[in-house]
Length: 355
Image 1 (tube, helix red, strand yellow):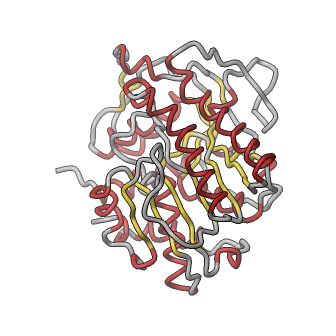
Image 2: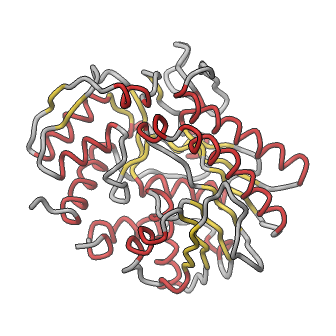
């Protein structure tokens, strides 16, 4: 079974596509989306395809991807595939093969999990900065109505112990002179670069700041802790926890993350950043491991991380985000962490059945 045949996944897509948003802003438009085959980008396309098919949105997407074959496999069964044009592209190189009007540019491409931070630190930084600059230049020269830069909860750094949850103005501690700092510091610099383009080039932009996102569009190679718990769960293996599990983080199910992205894109104020987070997604890591174990009928076991794994781990132990600002735009998350994990396991167990 592929994702498009799964009734729960189709239900997720229909839910986001049915939200009360100003969809007319996307009618007869063209979008350029980097990272189209990623966790967020692929779900976003499926929502737009649903709107094209059912409501005549007529929204064309140029999807940039580093691995064309992988992207073709992901979208092979996509209804409305004629509206999606996949382009093999390293965003750190000049963009090729796109002509004519582009109304919205969304930079979603990024190294987004710990193993990549440790094994490809240069690519992590350059995608978040040089890749962003290339897309910003493209947006300016093509007269885009709005630019969206996908940022991260990592930009807040470590909790100073003075708040329960980070609002958009919070600034915690990051030691920039470390390998692990490449991801959060390049995201911080990317946000500043967007502000520079707004001031100097007059570019309209918005920034959704994502929490740790999971869901049925995740890659099984994703090395984030929760993603690995889920991979173990769908394969019928014990859940491996490689710390004391006391880290207290915010998580967001893919459908809620994309509904948040669309809310920011279509309703957000120019130049503003918005946390995509809600209290129903907050959980300690050991509790998340226990939840996956319970849902999959396994147990939690403890192991020590190897040096490469440890190099990519975040040093933040409390990183919960305050989603009030986005909720004031009308965003209404639908899935708690318990419901999201259960749903992810159900969908992926059907897509990747254990032999």
